[in-house]
Length: 241
Image 1 (cartoon, rainbow, N blue to C red):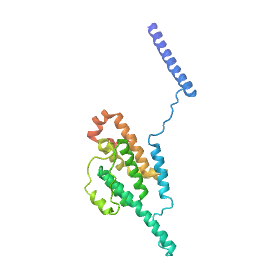
Image 2 (tube, rainbow, N blue to C red):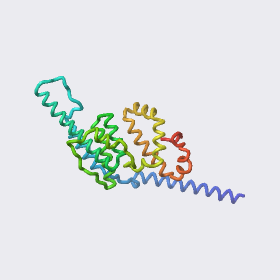
Image 3 (tube, rainbow, N blue to C red):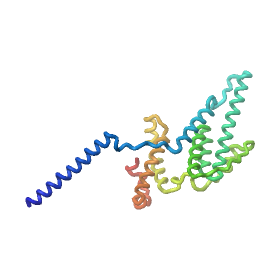
Image 4 (cartoon, one colour):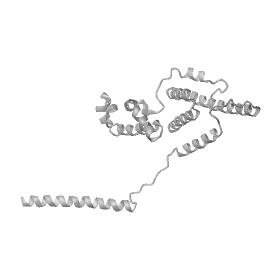
């Protein structure tokens, strides 16, 4: 019995010694930067920078609307220039939506619907830029033929009226996204409240939430298939981020 206690005691002491050694080694490794890992630049960093520069240049001095208070000749001339600039921006957006719709009508319809509802050219450009990045990642090219003289909101709306097909973003085509989407819809009020407190766009919270939950699903794929998918209980679970 005494021998058994002695062996057990040694195991405990040696165990603590090993743990202590590991902690001390980790402490010195961190302090001497032995665990440092070099950072990497996102492969699309240049695309983001180029888009930011181009967007800033194209919208510099462009008005969102045209004032009608001043009817002097100079003011009218400036209004004509502003209207032409706005018209060109809208034509470009419609052409790009039409081009995207030739391959991915579901995405084109979503962008067009939001564009119609907000009349926000900058927002539309950001959505189309995101689509361009995904197309670049897939090494896909969209058709560039667009009749700028005849294109209109009515024509684009008619072409996308019965949009269907797979989404450009593959992760949206799976059951995991539907579960996450249902959860965010259910908690939309909470997400908006948090965004208000943080003074940020609610979409920023939704974007991070989507990434984290998709990572959870794919790292625990078997668990999702066995429990969450058939019952869709994850959308109401407290584990949601």
